[in-house]
Image (cartoon, rainbow over all chains, first blue to last red; front, side, top):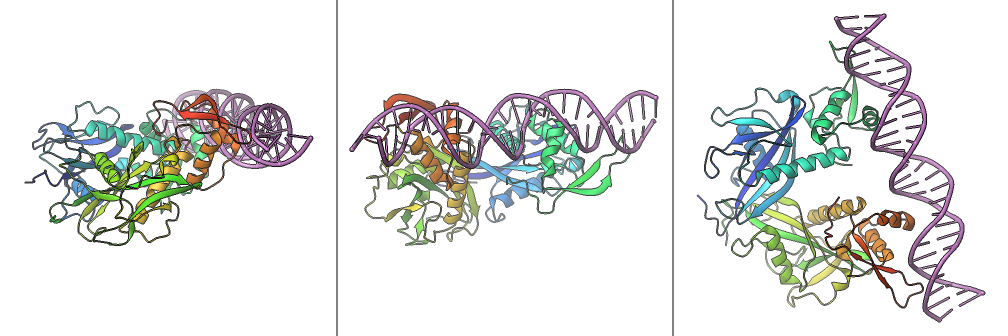
Length: 221
Length: 221
DNA sequence: AGAATAGTGTCTGTCAGACAGTATCGC
DNA sequence: GCGATACTGTCTGACAGACACTATTCT
């Protein structure tokens, strides 16, 4: 199909994160074609200049082919490139990080052919194809850095959520416990969080439900 | 030369920073070819898969063609891409940030043909080609964020330097004054700085000369 | 009443910002 | 000695970490 002597192969790979059972998970697909057939990998695909207006569009298209929901957050992480990272020749992989709300994980896998798995992000438990283990590591580090610096991963939350649920999500990303009082103190000043008037239902003591503010987009300052 | 319907044009652009007259400057070249002939731009060039083992190598090659010194720091910033950012068609520009020691600015411009200029980084004073104004803005922001988070821009300094000189460099990057006592207090703990036994010469009161530690590389933590 | 979880008050150490003070050099 | 610059001491306010405390709802 290509002659990667003059032109590099350009692909987008996506690390799609969500929260399942209180863990940060990442979507993996089992490769159905050579090279690296049968190995687990981040979902990815070649850029189609005739179809995609941008690399971000390409990433969206790749995700749509695996998954049947809209992704609220998609962010450029960095490129992995060189003559040898893909056996097909000179290649550039642009890595994107995407977040899927925890309440939209079920019933979204479109493909009946490909095997798909929500693996633990910190330790996927498979040897990944190409340099995808490295890519995953970088995506996770960017995510952790942002949360460390007090960006709120609201794109992982459902429409309405409690502060405790948000704290659990941050803990799942960071891989460590946070102090409740400290966490809530910081949130006091945040313009990203809006109190809905509503409360939880059917729990010991119902907590206030919050939502993301309208312009929210998970950037830093 | 190319048929950018099937394959995107892949270029590297480099924001090369240095310090001149106490200001943060960036190297611009006047384009000698279409498109955007005659307009000022960041130095850049197309990837040559036959010559370059990686995009970083390509960036080094591009810089070597304009400048006759080795660059101590080169870092991937992000990609700019899409069907319309370059009139030649679908393109991917990978932006690199490079730092040149302030004492190596003179006598390094290789090209006799192209016009070259060290423009003020915060306000280059020209309308730049393509999306280079945006690219420069991003490179500068990454640089500022790093210094804000206490990374030391030692690659901009000569072999030996005083703490005051280092403070001036940080101030030039940030575009604002720093408090001397605060700045030095932070440096106390740093493993990146090594006291040489030596002192300045021929100034009112000679200050201690420092150098970068051996493994230093301008990363964060 | 008691369990469980929501939410708050407070003490302490660390660090940034501000600013004044002391030390040491060239002249 | 004097001017200039290197370098340090100290006060204050903001905030993180730790932990105990109060509040409210379900069973």
